[in-house]
Every structure is written in structure tokens, then in C-alpha cells.
Length: 273
Image (cartoon, rainbow, N blue to C red; front, side, top):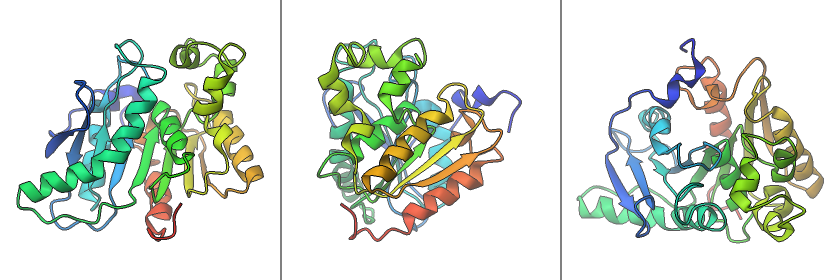
């Protein structure tokens, strides 16, 4: 790992194999990276972080996607409308995340068939996300019809009320939802993963104890609520680890992230929600 943990945000990665479009907005797209040989793992749909803001896009998870594809996973990194763009924030960011997860597996299958390539099993993907993307992944899993095998949440903003109280990233939660929980309570009721428990979806949460962007207490709050509701999330706390290491294939903790992913890979795709 480099001395600067944020270096992964600008690290070069090879272009995706192809890109699919799930809507008409320029950011309603998803990059697809495929294993060189036959896939040995399920489809991973990855949602990037950046506190839902337009200044961060899917490019910074390119190194992660390349690494996972090399390990046998077909990987899709989705883009979506974000704060600072027309249609971003509430409800557009949520609409896009849901539409991407719903539509992208079929779009990938069609694109592979059109290219004369074999189509791997794309049903019931693993949904993964980092930071704000981890929030969107957990939020999606709380929907009654979430067709996912499991969720890998890396340093997720998993409790929006707590994140708002902590004023993470200059009140990013209020910017996303248009106010605090006392001002727009109905939006928090819909948008906060803590409010949609139990999800019944297998979840693995990975969080560094030295994360100063999204403190580990945010994940702890979600896990406590999930267990109280009857869910049984896997929890991996990484001592001495900051926010960006969990998306960095060069970081010393990357094997712990892969191990958490393996717990979801082992889930029988027919047994989920």
C-alpha cells in the first residue's frame, strides 16, 4: 500500500470490457469487467462511495473491479445521479441505484449474447458498496423484493440518523435527503437502512477502526439494530485501518475484504430473499 491512502482514488486501471446503459441520463451507465477465463464466482454489482456527491465517480473503484475480475468474478461498477447534478439527491440517486441493480444483469446478458460470448449465471448477484455506496447497497437490500445473494458493505454510511448527527462530510446526509430527520422524517423512514430491518439478506460489514470519514460506530449502530431485528450480519472490524484501505487491492487488509466476500459467495443463490 502507498503512504497516501487516498492514492487509490486516482490510480490507473484498464478500461472496462464494455459499458451498458440502464437509462437515458449520461450517468445512468455501468462498466463491466469480465474474468479472462470462465467465471468462477457470481456477478458482483459494486456501488462507489463519495458521500453521494458528483465530484466522485465510478472510476476510482476501477482497481478494485480489475482485481475482483482477475479472481473470477464478473464485476459491474454502476454510476448514478449524484448531489450537485440535475436529478441527483432525493429521490433520483435512490431511483438510479434501484434501477441499475434491477436492470444491469439482464443488460449484461444481452451484451454478452450479442458479442457471441457465453453468458454466465448472472442471477442473484452479490451487491457491494463502499461508504455512501455501502449505504445504497444496504438500502436496496431492505426492499421487499431485493433479488440479491448478499451485500458486502465496506465502511458503509449504514445509519443515516447517526451520520446526520455526526455531520459527516459537512452534512452530506442532509444534502442527500433535503434536510435532517426532524425536517423530512418520511424520507429517512424510506432511505435509512436501519428503518428497513430485518432485510433477510445475508450481509457482511467490513469497517476500519481508524476510519475518520465514516466512524466505525456507524456500522456498529446498524449491526446492533440488525441483530435486534433478527438478521445475522457478519462483522469484520479491522484494527488500525482507515476509510480507503477497504477498497484498495494493494492494502494489507485486502485479504480480509476477500474473506468477507467469500462468506457471501458461499450463499446458495436459491436460498435468498
